[in-house]
Length: 258
Image (tube, rainbow, N blue to C red):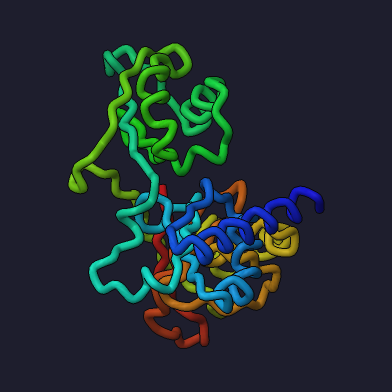
């Protein structure tokens, strides 16, 4: 509880700083639990003349920074919040691909945290076949580029990515099938090829988030475009209900992030 109260206090401090100084302020990268706490604070924060925007370096990022935007900025037509975030992207690739280990997300994250960095300075890590893209706070970008030289037993080179066309795009796998209803428990079971009953502990245990908000109701009805994250399982987007079958089941399309 003390940790949660400290986090709430920190978010309020950033909001007040943005309002009284008339400047943009940013949090570090927030995990899903922290984003959920921040969502609960939004009504009180936005009543003070500050808007909160979330971004993680790319669309649908799981770990995101919060930007506290004074009203003065919101009214500027040419102002784009996303371009102001202190987020950098680093491409980490083996020096010799044919001798490289099969590296996992855990391998990359472990090597980075072993450098002494706090987890809050690191955003999402997206894996490609021959490299990884690491989103980080811009203040640690130079340090990472200099210090990342080996992941597991593989020698690597790190390079910052600037061009928009070179930025990674999350890979998605389309999944389709029928469910009894577009309820949270039914759709999650389809996404992860398991039973509804096996997913109930995840939902009731606070491990399921819809658009960054914790949802603990099995019967929550999903809407088109919702992003669902299940801790320990993965993330997917609810596409749409395409039709209803003769047996009154719903045919749905999902997009699971690889």
